[in-house]
Length: 287
Length: 285
Image 1 (cartoon, one colour):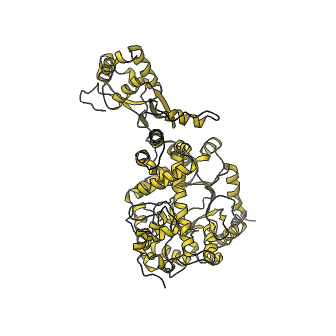
Image 2: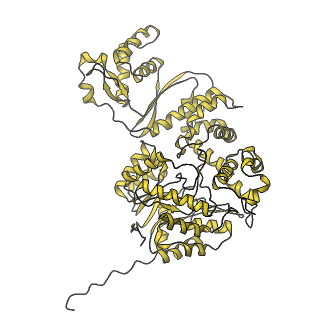
Image 3: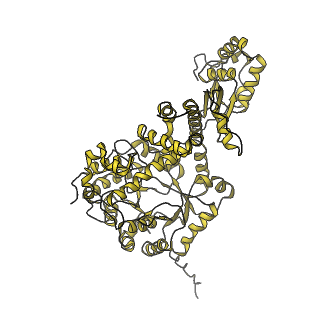
C-alpha cells in the first residue's frame, strides 16, 4: 500500500538518501531519511522493477550523485585531483559536498569553498600545498568566468598630464587575481601541462602570482615579492604616488629601483592588467 | 505544426565546449544549436563570447537542467531573471527544461529527479509552469525525463501526466524519444503507447540520443549512437507531429564534431518527407 505522504516529504526523503555518502542501506537508515520514510516502508514509496528492488533503483541516483560532484570538481581542480590521486580526491569530494552542498543552479561555483575545506579536511597530507593548489585553481576559475572589461589604452595613458601621475589610480581589469603562495603550486600546475616534466615536491617555497585573462585565455604571471606588493597596493586603490613611495621605502630591502618600477609598469600595461586610470582629473575620484 | 507556430529549425546539435574552435573556424552547416542555459548564465568569459558568435550565425534554443519545476521549494526568481535575459540575448526560439525536480531545502543535487505522477504533483507543477511562462513571457517547453524509480503513490502514467500538464499549464513539449525508450525498459511499458499518447500539437522539439544498457536497467548516458529502436520511435512520432526541430544529444565521450553531426543527420531518414512544392501551371495552359 502506497505511503500517504505529501510531495514535499517524498522529495526531502529522496534527497537525503541520494546525497548520503555511505551505502544505500546506510542512506535509507540514516536519521534524516528515516524521519521522512521508515526503511521498512521503502516498498510503499518506491516500486520494484522486473530486475531491481526498490533500494537498488534509488541507489542508481545515489551513486550518480557523487560521481557527478567528483566530475564537476575535477574540472575545476585538475591539479589538486592529480596530486591527491583518484581515491584521495574522491574522499575529499565526499567530505566536501557533505559540508558544502551545492545551493546554486550552476555547478560552476560548486568548488568555491574547496580552499577553506582543505584547511580542515581530515586525513589530508601536505595540507599547505593542497591549500595553495586549491587557491590557485579557484582563482583561475574565477578569472575564467569574470566579466570582460576593456583594457587601458595607450591613448588614455597619454592623456594623463605628467604632473598628475602621482595622484592617478590604476584600476585592474575584473578578470584579475593576486596570490601569495607558500608552496610551488604554480610550478606543479605547469608541470601537469608539460608531458614528461617532473612535478616539484610539495615543500615550502614562497611565490607570488597574478592570474588574469587576456583574449579570453586565463594566464599566470610570476611576480617578485616587491612587484607583488606594489601591484597589491595598486589593486587596493592606492594612488601611483602612494604605491611608488611605499616601494621606494622598501627599496633598501629589495632591488626595486626606479628602472625596475618602469619595467614592471610597462609589462603590466602590455599584458592588459588595467582597465582604467583615474583620480587625477577629480580629486575625490575613487576607482 | 505546433499550436504556437514555433518553427521547424531542422536538425541541430548541442553547443559543447570541445567543439567551440571547430564551430567558429569551420562554420559547419548545422541547422541550429541547443544551448545548455546554466553553462552560459554566469560567465562573462570565453563561453559567453563564443555563444554570442554562434547566436549571430545560427538559430538557438535554450535548454536548462536546473529550473526544478517539480520541486516543492519556491521558484528561483534570480535564476529565471537570468534565463530570460539569456533568451533575449541569444534570440532563443524557445526555452526548455525537464519535468523533474533537482533539489529541496535550498540544495541542488544537479540531477533530474523523478516525480510521482498523481493529482497533487500535477496541480503543483502546473501552477509553477504557468508562473514560469508568465515570467519568461513565452510558453515553457518541458522534456519528458528518463527515470530509474517509479513511485507507489503514482496514480497515472507518465504520458498521461505529461499530457494533462501540457494542457492545464499550456506548455510545449520536448519529446525525448530516447528517454521514452530508456524509461520503457526500466519500468516495463510499451514505448509506442507513450509516443502515441503525447499531444502531437504541443511537441515543439525532439531529442534523440544514445544510452548505456546495464542489463538490469538502461542509463540515459548520451554517450553513444542511438539504437535502431530509438530511431523507429522517432519515425513513429514524426508521423503524428510532422517535422519538428530535432536535436541529437551527445554529452559523454563526445566525438569529433563531424561524427556528431553525421549522427544527427541520420534523423533525415526518419523525418517525414517534406510535402512536394506545388506545381506551377502557366496561365492559359
